[in-house]
Length: 323
Image (cartoon, rainbow, N blue to C red; front, side, top):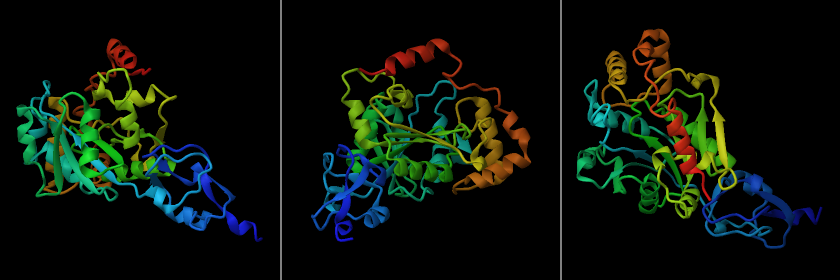
């Protein structure tokens, strides 16, 4: 019994600075350093983020760790051609990008919401969408989304970033919170959803993994398709695919804004719900669509830009396969 009192948590392997630390990355070992975490302390404390590189078998103390600092980043520009300046188009009187941001600020686990756009003059109108100071505007590289996200991380001291794209006016606060929880629980580099309706979910990145990606010697030419860099390089990045619970499994619903028929669908949706400047939660959205299934037929046949283009998919896969 006396020896058991000295069993404390140590790193089960090398842990990078900025990596999420979970109980699964620790083991119990005899340790006489008094401030080393006990298993009970680890259960209540983790997940945490490593402040420094931690070598295997290092006793884990609170001064090596910090709380996850999660920032939700909405990536948006005004360069769309199929539906020009779609982010500014009104949905029941409220611009589409504002609809997206209203949903994002309703997420409970994030410390800040940022609208990340380019530093080009054509994107100047997006500067106004601060929601009365609830949203920070960060401007950066027009093409390199990784660079823009890392700039946000520096300005907000984030160590976890949830990425949402600005063409999702029905972004789900509930699905976002679920994905964040799963990301922290599993301690992976990247987390994505499976079977959620298109346009309701974003994805989660550990900032340390984004930094490693940015330092890769291969030029990042296709960051618009950022998930492929993680999915196509399993030896470099850990990926967590979260199968949505049944209440969120409606993969046939198209709830993203890219084409005129999408605009028609969203205008009918928001007008029928009579939503003003307020978030749209998934339960409310689901109830309306189930009771009015004809609304999903408006844009059902609109295809995702890249998914049916074999040559483009081949190009993306080749470009995102890293050294």
